[in-house]
Image (cartoon, rainbow, N blue to C red; front, side, top):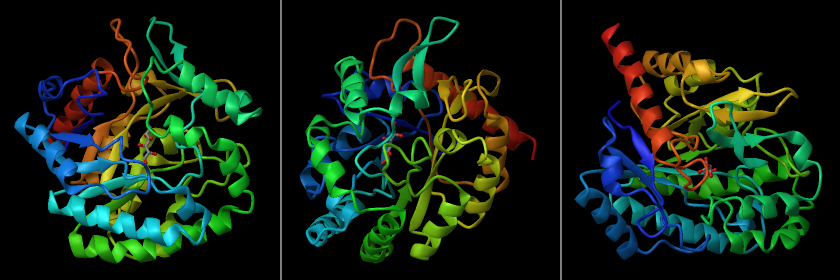
Length: 357
Ligand code: DNO
């Protein structure tokens, strides 16, 4: 696929080098970010330029940022949100100057993605990430502690220690924010930034809630088709787009992921895709992640790629989390080997689909 990417955390905090990425056949894009800029601050031009140069010097492209995170004051709807929205707009303008085309972000309160086990053991001896609902019925701080203790010393995206240190205060601040209020605050944000995106030709791609259900009493607003229909109407524009994360949406067995792809790609609302497989476990909503192959999980990755192909998808795509295999012990979900295997497989499916035309 022409815009196959690989998520990278930067030379100071990733065990994987740009050269490693370059050597994965059929990979052209790095999906990157400035991970050390505190949420809410403007991303400085010189830092963006340096990242871009580093990626390009390695023979790769940087056109997708994941993520420019949204300050909680915007999601809560505090008066201070306007200042953070102005900063966000400036970041969009700065990124546009350096050829960024897509910004992936999420609108999840407090927690980004949640897993209850970062080293779930599979039969073949590999490990991956898993979610079991019984572990999120207690105190959210237990989950935070467990994620921090089990991430091999790496900071996981969305689990930055400075943010999580304030979790009690945040829960309190969100106490009057239900799904309706969160949606209104989301609209306020979109109405402010989408005109800037249109001006700069940068497409926003909201990431689904992962898992796609309310957690710890916090609302979630991108869980299924109905939510997608609501979101697209909040601000009608192709710049108000979706990241279709096959794993996150697929974690709810009622979500028909190929059908969502067909519907929203045809409407030109999908600039970015995360391709991942998952396997359901005993209780409803429990799953562990899986190698990308259809045979390894509960999602039919051929049907997913076919839906992209049939609807003329020409956006950016990356494999999502991988297992830890062959002795690798990196950032959970973000090792080299299994994600590279994922790319080889996805590109193989794509070649077959193209040649079958
Ligand atoms: C987890 C990722 C998420 C994703 C954000 C987008 O591995 O899929 O952290 O990047 O939700 O803002």
